[in-house]
Amino acid sequence: MKPIVASFCTYFLKAEMLHIYRQITSLQRVHTFVIAKIRENAALYPFQDLELLKSSNLSPVFRGRLKYLVRAPALVYRGEFEVIRRVLLRRNPDLMHIYFGNTGVHLLPLIERWDRPCVVSFHGMDVQRRKNERDYEAKLRKLLRLVPLVLVRSRSIAQRLIELDCDPQKIRLNRTGIPLEEFPYLARNVPVAGAWTIVQACRLVPKKGLVTALRAFARFVKAFPRSRFLIAGDGPLRRELEQLVRQLGLQNVVVFLGFLGQSQLRALYEKAHIFMHPSELPPDSNEEGIPNSMLEAMASGLPVVATRHGGIPEAVTDGVNGLLVAERDDDGLVNSLFNLVEDPPRWKTLGASASRTVATEFAQPRQTEFLESAYFEAIEQWRKKALT
Image 1: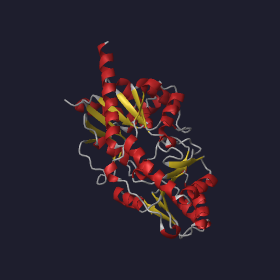
Image 2: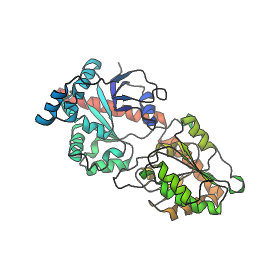
Image 3: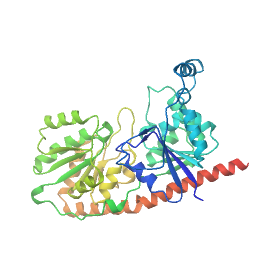
Image 4: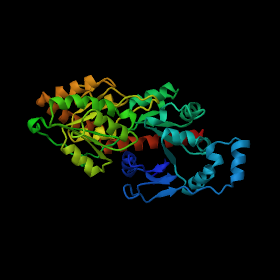
């Protein structure tokens, strides 16, 4: 009989959470159902076995008493603790997989009292500084002590957790799995008359380094005026970035495509020549793991020009399947672009190597196997502990 895993995801699912959907739907050796507070994008991410948490029926007076007199944690005074507890009692899972670290902190009162193991996935933003959340770091440290295993997307995130006193023996790499059949390798030809197409696909947020990318491209396009920079994705910086495009005089060569589905992304990568992703550490320390879009682009055969940030160097080896520069280094970035386009044999070699890297290290079946092994390990640890 397959073990049962409760996959807890507050939002199921935000548009940019395709990697979570892929992970949950690729499981083979366990059965999973989803617990969520909010259902989003149901047509984009269909999933039948979902427990959508109902609102608590606690009265406002009782809530106020729990919050201000008893000083109970938010999970308790909002009534969520009891709602989730009832789901767990009814479904009786062997393990709960919590996405992400900040949700794990919120669920701490439940994790402390539940008689089954939990594992928590950390993806980067959940280890950033949270000055406005009182005691967040102390609670995060407690969470790391309580759970038997911690899943991380990159070694860089693992190091951040170790700095928070997480036992290194608890950490397991849980990389993003890429379905290779959706992003097949394509051998590209050098574009006619220097009409290079450079792409970046990401949320339009500070850590993606889009300002640096635009500044570098502004210099690149002077040498290759028929080139274009296509940006897929949306986010809070869009208006600011569009203004920068106008300031740099790039209106005719930079295109904001908005959020794209998988078939649209695949088509975008097929007509592109280089993937640019100069991530950087913003003031709130929201660090990248390994960007999903970068891996998908690499799988299709695009060489990468990126930065030595977060988990990027764990996928991109400088001079092997891409070129890496320091964060916020638009000089280094534009020089890397020139190095690629002025040496077509190298450009082709790096692109082919990028595809092999993803096929070897990030293919979906392999990552699913690693995840399921972590589930079995955590369940076995709990069983042994229960017997002592």
